[in-house]
Structure formats: C-alpha cells, structure tokens
Image (cartoon, rainbow, N blue to C red; front, side):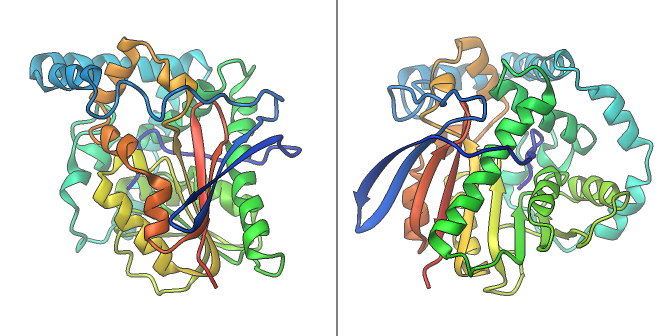
Length: 361
C-alpha cells in the first residue's frame, strides 16, 4: 500500500511539550495528545472532528460531483500534478533530476528480482492515485521527490527541507519510541521492525537508522516502489541491511509474533475503510506481545487541513479516491476492535497525527 507522496523520518532533537486528554470508550484508555514541534510551536487542532469538505457534507458532495465529471476530472489531475511538482521545486527539491537518476539506474534489473509474479492486487489498489492513471503501480521514479515535499508543506516556515524533515519525521519517530517505552517497558527491546506500505523505502531507512541494532523489513504491494527502494539500499553500508518484501499488507504471509514495531506511514488515507481494518488486524497478528503499531497520516482534526481553500481541497480529493472513507473512519476505535490497547493519538505536526497502540501481554 504505497503512497506516491511516500514517507520519510528522521530524529528530532529534544523532547516535546504535551497536552493530554484521556477519553474512556469501551473500557479502553484513549489518549489524544498534542506534541509541540522542535520549533517550540504546538500544532493546532481545528474546531471540527474532521474537515467540512469530507464525508457526507454538502461541500463534500459538491466536490464529488465535480470530480465525477470526467472532462473536469482530467483537468484537475493535471492541475494537481503541477501543484505537487511546483511546490517541490520551489522548496529546492530537484524533482526532474531525481526522477532522471532513478530511470537511468539499474532499477529495472532489481525490479525483476524483487517482484512476486503471483501477487493478486486488490481492486482498490489499482485505482488512480495522485494524478497517475495506473495508481500505485507506477510513478516510482518520482516518489522520493514527492516524499520530501510532504515535510515542507507541513512546516512551510522551515528554512530548508532538512529542517522541515527534522521536525516532521523527528516527531513521528519520537512518538513511536516514547509510546513503546511507556507501554512496553524498558526491557521490551525493538529488535524487529516492519514498515508496511514502505513505498520507495524512505520511512524504512529512517526506522533502520533510528534503531540500528534492529532488523528492518520494508513491505509494499508495488514492485516498482520496492525496486527503487532496494536499488538505493544496495548503495548504502548498513549494520543490518533492510529486507524488502513484495506482499499485500493485509495478508503478508509473514510469521505471527515476529515484530516489535509495525509502522504504516502515510498509507491509511489511500485505503478504503475495509483495507485499513484489515491492515490493523494483520499488524496485530504480526506483533509480539508488548509490540507497538504506529500509523502516521493526515489528521482529521488538523486546523491547517480544516482551513484549506476550496481549490486546494478539491485538487486533493481529485487524486485521493478514499480520502472521505479515511476521514470518516474512527481509526482509534478500529485499533481497539482489532485487539490493541493503550491507543494514543498524537498531533506530531500541523498536518499529521501519529496513532500508536500496544498488543497486550
């Protein structure tokens, strides 16, 4: 389940300021947490549970009707793609140069080695994503450049891509580690990590760097993304090389109780609700007792997202076919129903939340 606007992570210095709000539901403790970025400014929640342009609201229905008009939809896709590339290049991300470098590498040879020809793709995965008609089976050459732009959109005041990533990816990594230490105990070492929907491996590499003694696995449904990830990894020297697996995150085929952390970064908003629930159940099966699941993605309560202009949210929805389902799903409740406890929701930057939970002992 890879995202063209993939994912990345890095370590932020220092800790965060926190505001805790505990909610009792069904006998499970749920914590809504706002985490201050390393800049010192805490991300703000909006006044709504989710954006007014999502779900079954009149605005949402109007946008859906516009998207359903095919001639207009085609124009929206082109406009959305131009916005993505222009935003990246304004942030000094060499989009075209990075894409050219991938295409001129030996990535096609790696593709043949890593691809599982027996994979059966779920129907939703073949839907157009991010202005690419072939969905997440294409666009791998552009994925890393697109990934880098996520942080700059989240932290527009950052003076560089590096600073923005330090905040966005650092807060995400800290949320995972703090949750694991708090609920799994200091003796529950992180030895095995699975990154589901790893795209071209940006988030997987950051996980491997944050926990260098752990064995990291990157798993994705797109052999194209995995080929780019594996080709780049072959150029790096690492204590524990990352293993790449071509599989469905809802039915990985990996042995049960084999991981301490399962991460899904910017994956859920690209999936229908049924797939998100399937991913949660599979993660529960794969984690050892005391293990941590971490899902980072758009926050429905983000003030920034709730206040997007009509042009921007229309373009966004035109390239994200399951965005409404994602915003309407109670992700914390879905994790609880899958068997997880200690469910925490953390606003880790102005746009994104990280939801963590524990497999009980």
